[in-house]
Length: 225
Image 1 (spheres, rainbow, N blue to C red):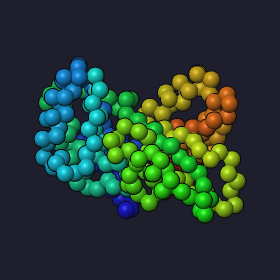
Image 2: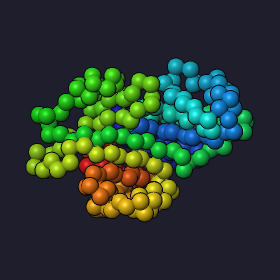
Image 3: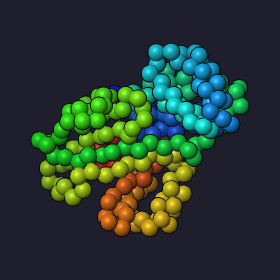
Image 4: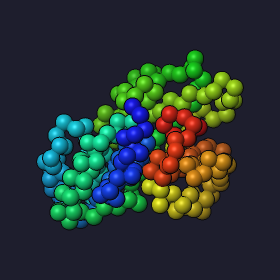
């Protein structure tokens, strides 16, 4: 798939409720109770074009989360109509969009070409393939695992890290919260695409405004390198 789909989504009108994450377009709608969340989800499930579209709906006590796809590269022009339809249904039922609550956590496992072993991770986690280099929870509960191929000349310092993809206007608040909690920025050379932070033990995590705030694709298929 090309980048045309997700770039087109970011540039489109009428999709302000939606954040483009590593897995694609996602929206969170606030509601008053789990029973209300179930009613809103049922209405969304009946929206035009939803049936058979691969949409993932998850419910909590006070929110309904809607994912239009499980991989950013699967975003297509038809998803614009789906997003607008979902937003219209949610608003009709009194659900309030909350971009600050939208996020995706991805586990990135770095490996040189001859050591890439995505099949192992699919097997051990009971995950499915969404793309050649990743594994996704078929229930939609767990984090996506992405195998990041490293250039042969690049040293392997951290074999595994976490990517946190958030809305572009909320990345600053997430960074400030992480630093206030004792984290430190170890690499900001890729900002404003993403920042790499570490905890006191040196474990790393990338907070990403990409792809939601991207004007270009950074090095690597699906996010930070």
